[in-house]
Length: 530
Image: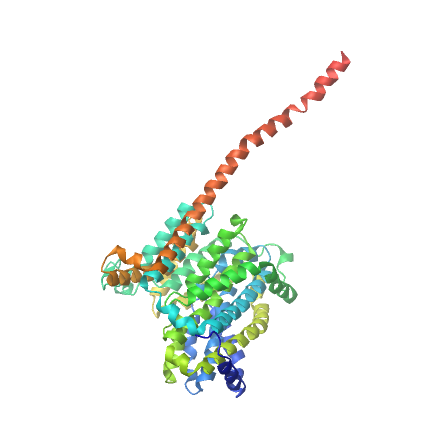
């Protein structure tokens, strides 16, 4: 099987240059995606679904270019409120807020947004480069991953909770378990209701986005209410396009994190049903684990922003590969794209790639061009959005709360959304008050139902026989990596304690020597007087 079909690639140039219409819709699509991703509660999937009917009278290639430009724009749009007000616009931007918001509080909001845009743009480009080279192998690789492997990947994301808490591993695990339990409320994979207390509104589970906004954003607003501005120092509340561009250029200092995050994003994005919500967490945890200064994560480390944004953006390429190769969506966004395929009487799968390789290559190359468009449009979008740091907190808090309540209501269509927002705002405030990491609970909430569902499928396939695992070498490798990620923070902490224990006697001895030294001149002076 050849890596790249050069004849099909040359034919794709004819598709790309055959009409101006696909390129006419590129910039509007990016702007719609950026705006949709930046509005909490209006997710990228929702905005894709809203614009889907507009593609009915477009030809197939134009429709896909327009929809993927919305998809690409939303991929970065969620990072803007995550960095500026600690309110991720999408679930894929959860870990962007971990270091992006502390950077904004330190007056580095321009640099954080520019760096996030660079990581998102280059990550998306890398994802599509990998897809271009490996699209012929995508179907074979995706079919090797069953529900057991998918559940391990999601569990891997949940085990990263402990590393997100730094030294308080146990509190991170407890917060994650809380989110995991909340995520299983509703009708389970076996058809049995759990934790609903007979309330029909809970049969579909806890609304994830209102709960996430409550845990992360509105609880943070309660704490900010005592401040005058998001950025305290007036000289740091500067909105500067040159500083945003300088932040974009800072990516050259974090190339290792960028490439690792992009690879993680493509691999995780290619797994059907997992998507960018897991990819950004795995990449963030990997960056923290490999950092020489892991304690700086969560306090404004730029590597945290790069790791999260590169992974959640490059996962788009992986999920598109699964869509092309198997006709299966990698996440919510590609599920809407699958609907667009159906609207134009196109079916994804190995046969689609074999018969329409030039179209596949044209879509991939078109998405690479979108990355250049995102870099340009995104810079000017950031320039307008970053003005929020100049808004006084007394005006910002009610405005954000109104937006959050409205978004929650729109998302659920009833009062369940706003009530969930209010309840989890209180829970998030209590978590912050007692140092229990709301972000860890969000991770468990996002992945809980998925892990349970995949484990049930794996149990049904294996008939409850644990030896089933030993016949799946990919699962064994993934289990080994999972165990390594669990044990590495514990081993690292033990090594640090041992190092501190060895250094303590030396430090005490040096301190005693310093105390004795001043007495020696006094004794010498006394002898000379005698």
